[in-house]
Image (cartoon, rainbow, N blue to C red; front, side):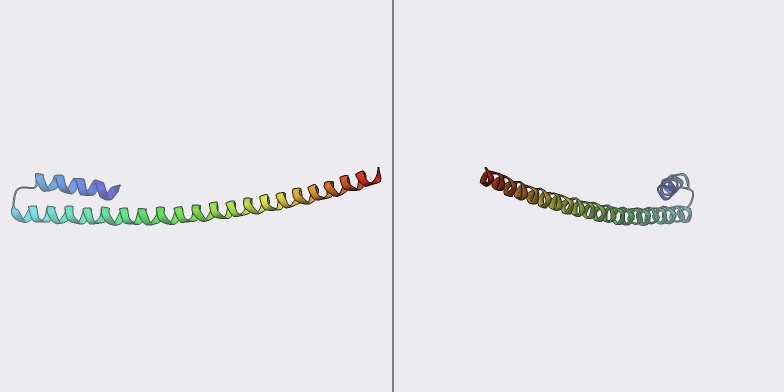
Length: 96
């Protein structure tokens, strides 16, 4: 934000410093430098956001994998219990 403010101030200074061509050139150079700094800051922010997004994505993927494994284990237990119940029912029917 500071660099963006500097770019705006430099641009205003360019208009206000219309005294000599040398002063105008200096003001333009300041404005160009401030704009370049703003671009660099924007690129840094974008890189940071991209890194954070990647970390969040990895965490979500890991969590989803863990939930899927728990669901798989739960359905396996349910299937085993159902098989045991069927075997019990079959045993009871044969015993009667």
